[in-house]
Image 1 (cartoon, rainbow, N blue to C red):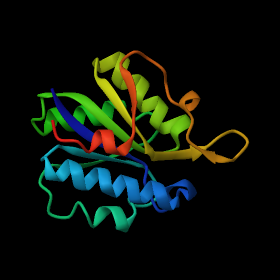
Image 2: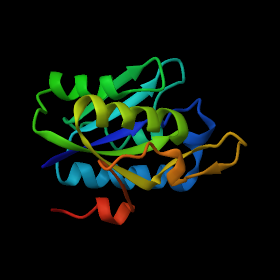
Image 3: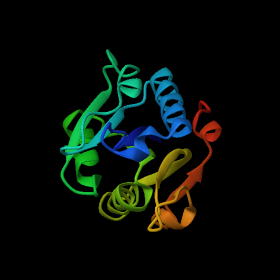
Length: 161
């Protein structure tokens, strides 16, 4: 079962994208994905700036990275469209990381599970977001729950199969 890495909304204009440990862990996930030649889809929310340069610089020259723009929280369609259009039809599992877990990450996961029948692995330490009371956090309760959604530590993701 081939996996692709999905990086969601790690953009300049989102405050949550600047959470230091989240940025470091997204970069570690990217480095691992590149080392085992996984496709990487980078979702960017329209009008919110580019993906942080600290992250982008690790993707320069990598031939399996695809940038997609979305205009709503849910980026599931954009992920699947990117995989299809670029010939990654053998991907059955998606490792997800990024920010705005209670909105963009969760909405994207829900679509990927229900509309595209994908197994989702959420890299906990590479996700961050605001709760309604504006505290930064990662909580299982903010992620769409389904039997096809698995929460992973970064070390679990970064193990060759």
